[in-house]
Image 1 (cartoon, rainbow, N blue to C red):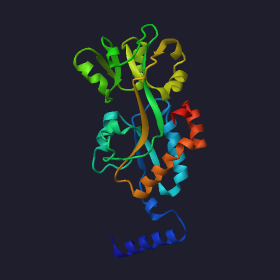
Image 2: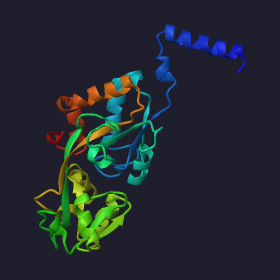
Image 3: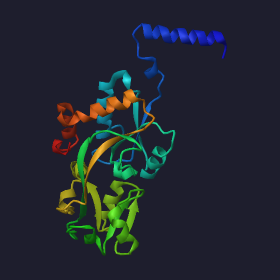
Image 4: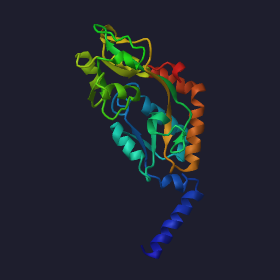
Length: 262
């Protein structure tokens, strides 16, 4: 590139900074990828709709020019795992737990405080209810799952032939397999119950939810280690304050999530 062009570009950047415009660092950033495999309620309820988009909008408005535009990309679970495993990956993943990304010590990625407390519940048909108490309760049954999702406590049972597993490409497809009687049980998050009840009017009439949850866990933001420190530090501070934030609690209610889960 000619020296004159470089000089003109340098002068323009200095002029913008002097006029109080957005910092050159933020202006030069491309969009920040937000990788999610949660294509079901409450996280995704339609194109550009759902709790994920509400969270991103809230954070974007409060961060101002500190954060580049954040755009959600809905991808299969295995694709998300492959991308975040790359040494050059930059972005964030919402609603996940360190245990799901082999990062119990939280050294591989940057993690925020919990966004939400959640549970996986065991759903079955009321005509064939499953009284779940422990993984052994699933013996002799066909378990519905989602491709790429790992349910560690059931793996031994599946390998031993005590449980059959039938996977589909989405949570909704899995739920419809249950309603058709193709599987005996599946796992569903407590945070999504209100959304499924709205989407499937006969949900309560046909679906049995076991009293004992399969798993309790905390949902966090996973941040790339390559994220600039000022951005990751801001996100960690912002998330840590959400449980006491009235605006956040109102958003949870709007998406059918009890604030007690936050």
